[in-house]
Image (cartoon, rainbow, N blue to C red; front, side, top):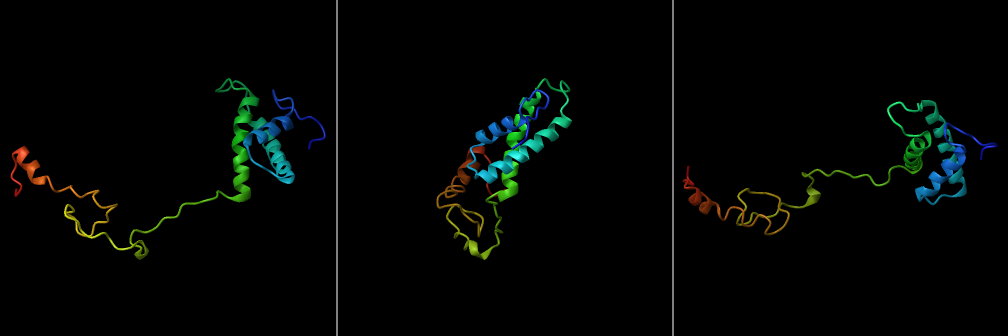
Length: 141
């Protein structure tokens, strides 16, 4: 792609570094896509080199720092080209398409409660009187 070798900080061959990042990404790309991604990463690596300051806040080398960031950039490039993929959608609980609430069961003290399944709340109120008796409390109070 480049007519010569581009060296930035401790990276002797930026094109080779970006090529390794692409190879390790696991993406199956056409030749055009691969070339486009390589150009994107090389340009991004050059931009990273402008903001890199050796030894400020970290002992990380430029090559390690750039590789870490370029791996993320591969996914950003993919999202720019094809979007994020599946996006969750939210449904209102008032939507009539969800069906009718489950009928009130023997242990359900709240009329019209939606239930996740039979028996889930079935015994919820059945031992209430025995709990009051165990605590020595009057259930009517």
